[in-house]
Image (cartoon, one colour):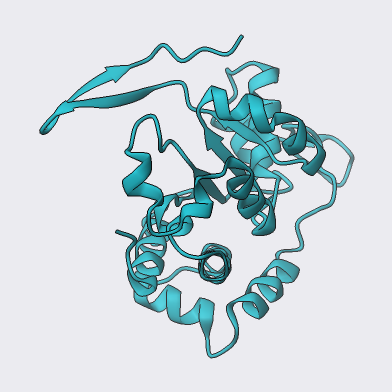
Length: 231
């Protein structure tokens, strides 16, 4: 069963106050009717973006600041406007000193810093893919993520998962929800990714293929699988 809105927002805020890079929210989004999912998603985005404005003592303080007696959507877009994220930045590179030489201690934004420092030893291809995700959607360029994962029908029971909101079982519904909210990426198993890849490309939506899963043998016992491969 999906958690109530207050519980979801508090959990999102706890992750942000604890120093997390973002939030992965699945069934608490798609098990709600479309209108309710979008409304909750806007509030989640407001909380995530608010966390970049200043430090907060606790999750409740962050949620209160993010929503502050306004519609969550208004807060969201107001916070986004105040981000002042540069439209273009040097790929993976540091900032520049007044004399034009690279400054290894400063970066134009958190994404550039993260790619240069935390992923310094990774391939340029991997860093390019990460940059696409970190710069996409409403949280783009802030160093924060908001991702929609759907692994139901393989790892979780599809009937139980989608019964509260049957239309959400359609992968096109899922992709549209992620795009409508300006989420960072959509996660699904390779079979679903293959079906929607062409449309996701048109929308510019980054896709993440989930390459592992587990299934129940009955009771609490589960068997892990790590053999989902893309052709």
